[in-house]
Image 1 (cartoon, helix red, strand yellow):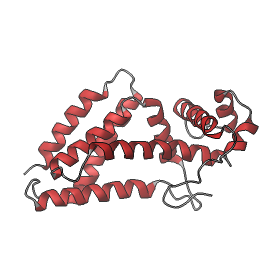
Image 2 (cartoon, helix red, strand yellow; image 1 turned 135 degrees about the horizontal axis):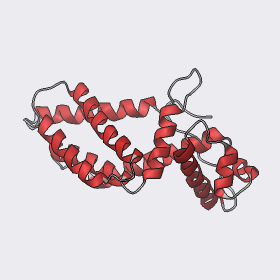
Image 3 (cartoon, helix red, strand yellow; image 1 turned 90 degrees about the horizontal axis):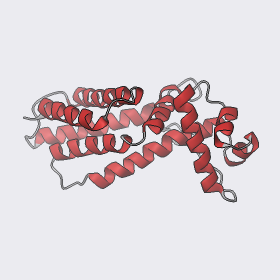
Image 4 (cartoon, one colour; image 1 turned 30 degrees about the horizontal axis):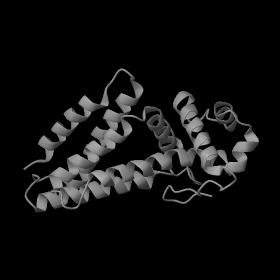
Length: 205
């Protein structure tokens, strides 16, 4: 059973569980990346992982739980990576650029995992057909808006609607990631540099 904030129960702890769970989650990410959310069946995941369906249901309560874990594991790992790259001592403008750079840097070596995460976050629904991960996106934008307001209060950012600017920045970041994820010829590093330059000029006083 999942929670409204996008969290999910931890996979079951069994003999050799952690390594097997990681193997299954990796297989699920590959399947999601290749065939999409709707076609990501337990059978396909089991075949990719090289295990039986029974092994999967032994470690995970349902397909729903596997797909949630794929998205949440990557999201949580990314959050930890950003936390190591950003400090409270940074100025608002430095913190804004550092956290955006860290996020794109994290995903730059995880194209398959990113595609899988997007599939789950875009398609997974709670009871009542509510987007299961909607709160995460809303919280990210709210946190970014608070940082922009702090920068405005300190005179580093020009006057603008902080909430709207936060959503514009999120859209620019997600747009760059989506384009990179769908085109394997693209290098995310120069795209990141261009995007950060654009955002800095958009917000600076």
